[in-house]
Image (tube, rainbow, N blue to C red):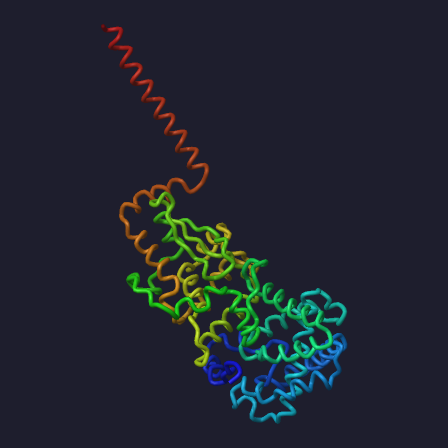
Length: 413
């Protein structure tokens, strides 16, 4: 088998989820065989043909040459899908479908990176919907398909091939929800665009970091489901800080002066309309039975869901520079992570050390009274100023009293 199959029985399982239609079905464009031919996507079939035609015109290759490379490899490309998905299509029909979809996808990505959608008269709202559709599990094209097209282009136009690969890197970086400018994921072994996005989010060290030696550190009582939210952690003196890491695995817990306060660092992430669909489909991808992985995305969402119970938690994470809210209200952001985090089964080894450290810190009774005083009485600069004023006033009063007593005994003597 060339790459992992896009398993249809996993897709069927997801259809029982209340958010399936909202986050798993394409909004404007179908790619590949799963949703192909549905009436709601007929209008965008014309746009795909237009994009494919424009793409071919810039490659230095003819329709026949590019279609030929897909036709020659259609057996391998068919193996990328479950047999139930492709059995109704002849090799010729499937090759044509993938040829058009592959060319249109590469052209869309290139136009997106160059910011030239006005040239093809596609509106911004449609661009946003297509972006989301490109990262739906049921809408994935084998990356090998894109690779075949780019390899064929390279034979006559190596500059174009390099530009296309660079455009894909830039496109994935812009979709990652994390800080841009990080090193792009290696597309060499990518299964599809959703897989490439996952690689970018987890980074090279976060994709298989729980498949080796098992962590024998004792799990906190109650595991993930009893983990404390932001408000509870702040009450015992844990501060939140954005991490310089550009990967979801960059979560660390440290103690200043090796004692107090505790500092929990998380990578900054942007939350907007596309966040939930992307995470939902990434989690669905990790659930696929033929995809061996460490559940890195699932575990991250579970960790964040454990921290966020209500808008107050979102506000504190936003103030710490960890969440950037482009969605709307803080309640909406809380809803995103609470809804998507429901009924997930994370990898218990990921973030285990962090959770154990936090649990130990939380249970230190000596920390509690110190942190409660600070949390209650020093929440704003005004309370700090008032405390200092009272402290100095008391100190001045004590000095005056001592001076008066000493003066009394001196005069008496």
